[in-house]
Image (cartoon, rainbow, N blue to C red; front, side, top):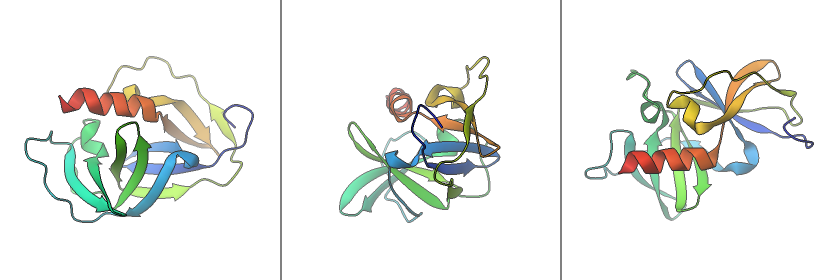
Length: 147
């Protein structure tokens, strides 16, 4: 548990890295589709896509965080709401934790890499280690990388 309430998490994998988002923060999960290229966008922007009638920027989450290029492309988009609209995170694997999962915060230690700038902390969720994403920090990080 984070806080006093049991929570459910969406568990995301990007290569060997495991992340989690509180399930309530996720608008939808869908199979990755074709995007329209965005001219002069940073390399981590896959493109724009029509998601339920809205134009959504889709980012390659692995590339955003500076992971080496992988031969495996994102198989899923995780659509989240941000202050300026929706954002799609391209990830390799998605699953949901059991409702009321056992969540324990670990000692974070020093955090200074790009990956660590977008997380609330490192937790175990039913015994597996995940970096729990902060949507606010993710938004701020994406906006600084867009300029």
